[in-house]
Length: 240
Image (tube, rainbow, N blue to C red; front, side, top):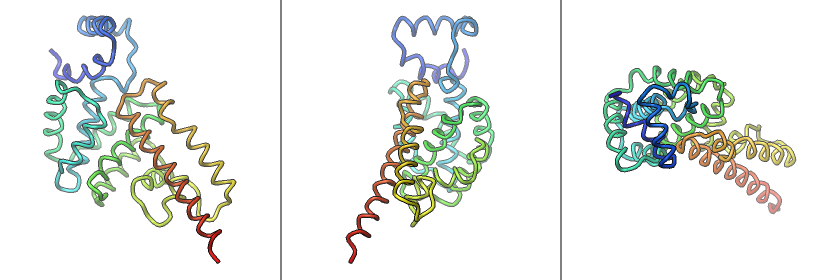
């Protein structure tokens, strides 16, 4: 029996009972390659790589704290039966942060041609890294490397990072704009980002729950950034 079989149930248990039985039969007989077209992000190999990458991120600052693991488990949305398998893999991978590049490369290959999903995976990792209230420099470097592996450019990386690490100009950085632009430009950019990053797009693409949740968090950051800029404008209008 394949060692990744328990993780494959993360996909099967979201299907109906008849479809679940059919997919299971095709998978175990090897006939799935003829009849079942799997979304790359639903494959056991993707789940395994994501669990390992998240675990190594949690260890990047020298200590894997419980809150980071809990944040990841909440994103992954596993059942109690599956949780033991995920925790076992997480505990094995978090022993050492070394080798994380291999898992990032695996995910990049599995999601090749799907940049939206790659960005959402990185945002999920950013959320986990910041779940303890601070982004450690080692975690920052870890995630910067993952961004490069996903072919995410420096400007876009800073924009994504700003959604989780709040710095003086971060509301504008989240929207990918320089401070001081006009209200019309901010509004136009805001509406464009909302349309591009709405979780419904990922759900339509059959993205896994963790990726959809990451997109939901990103959307919250975009809305918060826009609200912060509007509040800043309101304060300036009221100033004597």
